[in-house]
Length: 352
Image (tube, rainbow, N blue to C red; front, side, top):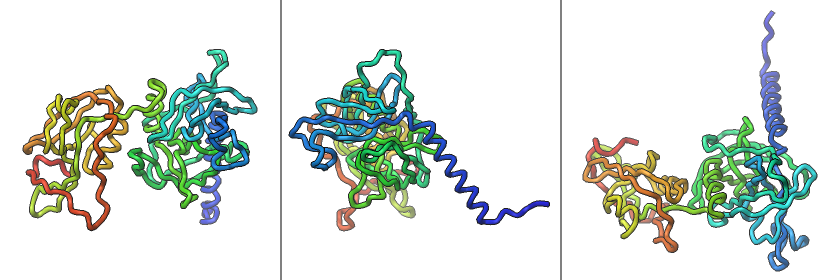
């Protein structure tokens, strides 16, 4: 005889499945998470605004390579005279490989003083891992002086902050957890804790895995994050393909800076910038995000629309100028003037 599954029983099974998934991720991943401690010069202050500990700052990190590379938050180790990691009741000295306080708040450390054959359990950064709104995330961090513990939440949305792509999550955070990994239900790194909001304590911001891997590669190679430029200034416009259709947003090259890769490659003022490395560009945050992932010296391809004809332009990403021209800001004030209108033929402008 078939039994009928009541709603209450179905809910119990769902909770049990959820619980098992979280426990499994914790069991597989906790051994890769470390506490990071930075000893500061006397004048540098204390632990995250705690005046009782005048020479110590603590945070969380995790092994990203079995040879002892640790990713953490740059705000944890900034200005440190010595850095240690604590792992499974052991303490190891670490050196700072590189840090990026300007945009990503990421720092890369290397455990020192051990034979090269020593291996640690690592949580690799896979740039193909992404998280959509509503996805489960499990943060593993050291809250205060407590042992490493999980905090479960969900992805809210993606946003650009300080020209950096960030993942907004509904995860509660505490002092000492900066730099903690956020894992998906399969135990893969989905992001790294960037910071939290003092006004919204249940909202935490994480650097997505793809962005963290891009920054870590620069820190490993150069000791700093190097962000690139195409040598153009742009503006937001509206494209009108027909009087019967609403306008569509687009980015137009307003100025090609002299002596830059864009000038040498043949970009021209008035070109509509449609894509960067096949990533569609329609609004300024699209371009800002695409530029974040371009590494200095790599080849990139942009697609532009010029005189109703599509053109492919290949160029090498140049270092960002020391004092770049200010980028145009997205217009959010309803009283601000509307974007200029550019008229193109329907066949030449790709549909949304």
